[in-house]
Length: 334
Image (cartoon, rainbow, N blue to C red; front, side, top):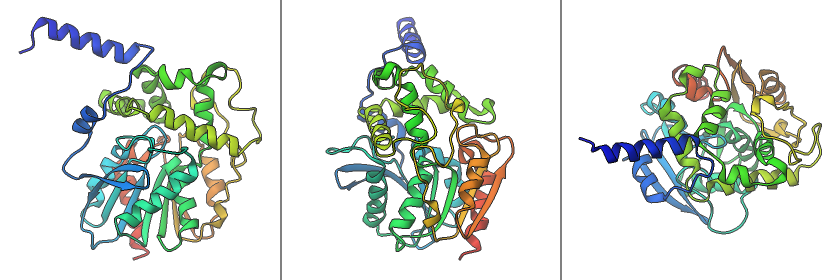
C-alpha cells in the first residue's frame, strides 16, 4: 500500500510530465525495462544499435514493418497479433526513434534511414520481403524498394510520405527559428494534442498510448535526432509551393499544413516497380486522401483502400481490418 508521501510524489511527477515545459531526457535502462519483451532483440547495424522484435516462423514470408515520425515499433502491436501465425514479422525502431536512439557518429538523414533499414534486413538474413511503412516509414519503404530490388518483393504504404511532413512538423515547432521548443519544451500535453490531431477517432487516444509516445520521445538523443533528420531533409529539398518551413512563426498542429507531392520533394515514386497496396484514412488531415491517390496513380501496379473515419495512423487506430486487408493483398502474390 502506498504511503502518503509516495502518492504525493507520484502525483507531482505525473503532473509535471503532463504540463511541465522543460522535460528532461529519460534513461535508456528504465525505458528498455518497460518497453522490451521476450521477442525484443538488439543488433548492431553500422553505428546504430537497432531495437527490433521478431514474431512468427522464419520459414514463412517475411514482412518488415516501419513506423512513422515520433513513433516506434509498438505502433504495429495489433498487426503482429493478426499476422504472426502466417508470416515472419520483423519490426524495428529506426535510428533516432524508440529504444534504438541516435546513431553513434555522423548526421541523421533520410538517406541514412533508408540505408540502415536495408542493412538491418541483411543482418537478419532476409530477402524478398514485403516492406510496410506508415508516414515517414512509407517514404523509406518505397525508396528502399527502388534502391534494393533484390530485397523488396511487395510494398504496403499506409498514409505514406517522404520526410516532407517531418520537415514541416519540426519547422513549425521551431518558434522564431530556434530548435529550443521541440528539443526541450515537450510536455505530454503537446504529444497528446499531436496524436489526437493524427487520429480520426479521438476517443481511441488512450493515456497509455500517449505515455508511450512521450516516454520514447524523451529517450536520450531522440528529440535532437528527429530535428536533425528534418533539418537535413529541408536543406536538401529547398523551395516548393510553401514558404520556408523554418521561418519565424508560432507552432501549429500538422492538420493546418497543406501537403502536396511537390512540397519539398519531387516524390519520384513512379520508380517503384513492385506490387503496392495503399491504405489511407479518409480523415487524414496530415496527408489527405487526395494526396495518397495522386501517389498511387504513379505506380503501375497499385491498389488503393480507404478507411472511413480514420486518420493518419490506420494500422494503430484500426489494426484488425487493415492487417486483414494486407493479408489478402499478400495472398494474391504468393
